[in-house]
Length: 253
Image (cartoon, rainbow, N blue to C red; front, top):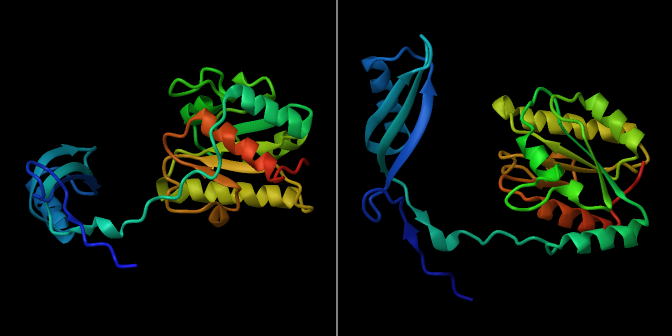
């Protein structure tokens, strides 16, 4: 097998291959000419040259937000970029999900969902769990064979573990949107550790986490069973639950 021919690409701005990109960032300096010079020096250090500040706005007395437009020096060999792995399981209709759960469990599948720690952003967890759903799809509450307990926002890990035990949950869904200082990673690892401690026999619920910034880690890194990123729909989560059931991964506490 011969190697693929290089396919060198650059960003597109005004004309094909001109390398023009737009970046935004905040510097901890007061707004003014000196701050703009600092922003341009940073852009040059990032490989954007020439660059220009197209927007600068004070964020209080000691910070400035910038948008910088400039030409990137770097190129990418697109031929060397691998195709992402496809989903390991098919999407299913609501009736197929219900039938699979009823066949495997002979009862309803119990899910407990929450935003943990200080995270108060419930849009993601609500989109997956609530019957109104997301992107034209009904949420998991719509499935008659799924029982959903949505604990809402800012739930302590200890409370989540206790509620999952009380409900005898098959799966726990956690949403993490706040990502400053890797809070989403720390919270998820803490949650996984708490469930392992509460279930030393290994018969814990499935642990599923979702959010927009989990693309740099794997489930094994965090001690969970599955990670869903931005744009995930309820049907994808439902299909995964059925897939996990088929593989015998559910372990009821």
